[in-house]
Length: 421
Image (cartoon, rainbow, N blue to C red; front, side):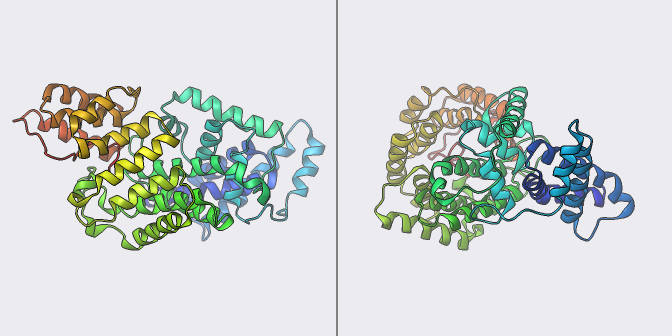
């Protein structure tokens, strides 16, 4: 890739959401916003290698997309009405809602309660996170074609229902918050466990954007425990990012990570948020419990000192709130450390997660510890076939190939990836 090509790729990661959100605010049409943003980037691919990268790439892209949007509106069937509308939109409208941030407005628009929860998440991942339809489909364990149709229908519904582009008024925020937090967490996860061929193992642009938007939501609702919990969870996970992938591009599990490479400032901030929530005396929600589990993991300098009984107890609380198969899978990873692999495997085998790579990776690790090498190898094969993250795939292949030699049974869980990293 040329230098200009690399710049365009970086600018796309950094500016896509800004351009789409700015157009959505001005024109109130998500199709126009997404299409014209794409055209602006296509124009950049053609012109920047010849004319050079402009001093302010984001402003250039927004201006180009804005002009193309006006041209498109002028060509619509309702020419005169659309033309007047475009001219009126040539100046930015007054700020809407409680926070003057276009991308946050876009998140709340995509997470409108008129849309089904999965549709809200998928639409925001596409328009705000800039993920491709295949990446979103993998996040949902869904077919690409079905996901594409879902996103198209969601944009059409927003347009037909005239859903406003803005942050809701303060009294309406709690009802809208659950979907927003789910969206932000999935954006973060896609960055931390990036999928797709040729994709970096960790996409710091997505994790940083998810954290930035979560901070904005917390500024808006500082007393909400789940907002604080999600921010703490992200910070405690992000703190481990530098130690998560080896120099050779392979996943490094939580137990094996160089804890000296962890970001202590992020850990301190995350722990402070967790402690504040515990001190509140209020019953914790899902994100607060996940943050507390991560606080236990990051509270010790040596993995051997991890308080697994506390981890399992926190998962027990989480299962009562969210008895989903993935939560129960993660709980089983902790149970393996407390009660042994045989007990954990009995719990894992009953979970309906055949299409989820971490399910097979966890089974492979537990079977390995039990000395059932042939079954372990088959489970690794299945996990490798389903995994989309390059670092994770490399790790799974190495662990599987080690089974070809003399069988070794680790005395601790060190390669299940459902709960580590």
